[in-house]
Length: 120
Image (cartoon, rainbow, N blue to C red; front, side, top):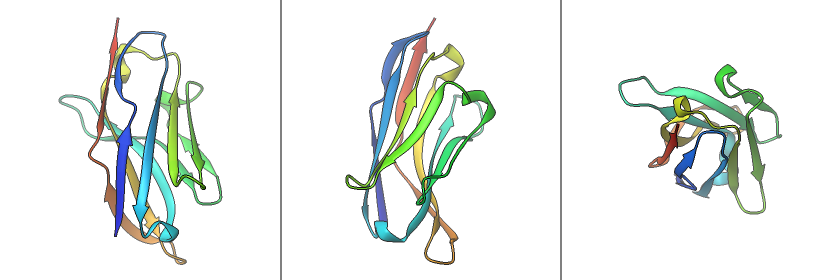
């Protein structure tokens, strides 16, 4: 089992920055890929960015150039640095682990989410 706990959300003005953290515990050595998703009111949950255990990253188009995903293996924590925030970035942000084990089999762990609100 894996537990994911997000933190760092809040209210920020457009153009500002926030850094989200996702602390992982449990069977963390099995995790091969983690990521951030977000869900705005009335919209489907969408991918923001992912990072593999080897450090390869992928950032979705709406966030590219503004958001950076990183990890600190010593702290078992994944970060999402969000710059140049826009009101459209307002959403609940969720941490996720979706590939586990040496065979990268699908797994599905989620945090409880953290609210990000960007005011205009």
